[in-house]
Length: 293
Image (cartoon, rainbow, N blue to C red; front, side, top):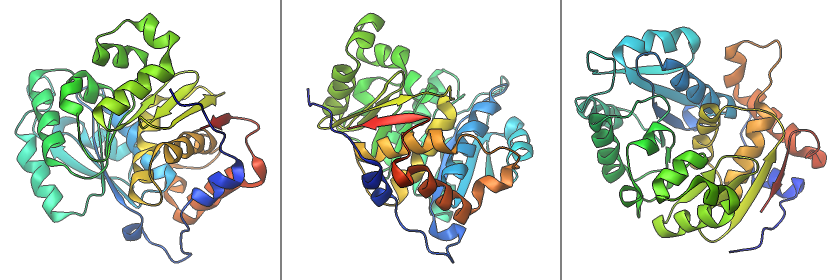
C-alpha cells in the first residue's frame, strides 16, 4: 500500500486547464448523465447540476420519459433525452438504441451512470452493454454499481467508480467493518484489480488508481449524486489520474455554495473558471477540505 503524498495549493492550481476568455459551450465538453427513474428524478438533477457547476459546456440528462419534464423545470440549461420505461417508470433495454443514436449525432465526451436508476435486471443489462461498448471516460455510482459486479468492471478504459462503504462492500463480497477499518487498502485493491479509479466516499474520501492513493477530508456535508456530476468534467479536459480526482473532490466542496444566485449562474464558464481558481489560489485549504496524495 503506497504512502500518501501531499498536494499543495500551487500544484492544484497548475492542474486546472486554462479556459480562453472567448470559450463557448462547444469547447468545454459534453457530459451525458444516465440517471433517474419514477420518483427519483432528483438524483439525476443533482448529478447533472454538479457537471454544469464544475464547468461542463453541455450536459444531457438521459432519463425515463415520465420524468424528463421534472428535470427540465429544475435545470433549464440542461438538454434532456427521454428514454423508454416500464409501467413502473424504470428504464428498459429499448433505451439502448435511443442512446446509440444520440451518441452518433452528438459528440459525448463522458458518461455518468447510476444515480436513481433503480435495481432490476433490465437496467443491469443496459449498464453492462454500455460498459462493453463505451470506450471513453465513464463514471459509475449508486445503482450503476448496484446492478453489476466486479467482473463486469474489469479492464474498461477510463472507468471511475464512486462507491460508498456499503456499495464497495457488496462489490468486494466483504464485510462493512473490514472496508471501514482498511479503506485505503480496499480502494487500492479494487482499483488495481479492475484497472480503474476508485473514489471511496466517506470521511476521509479515498481516491486510488491502484498505484497512487489520495485522501480528502471534507468538512461540509455534501451529496454523493452532486459529486458524481463534478467528476466527469475533469475527464474531458486536462490531466487524468488520482491527483485529478483529488482536485475534483476539492472543487466539489469549494463550488457547493452559491448564495443568492440562480441555476443559470452555475454554467457561466468564466464564473466557474474564476471560482475554481480562487478556491485554490493562495493556499486556500483552510475552510472546507484537505487533500493528501
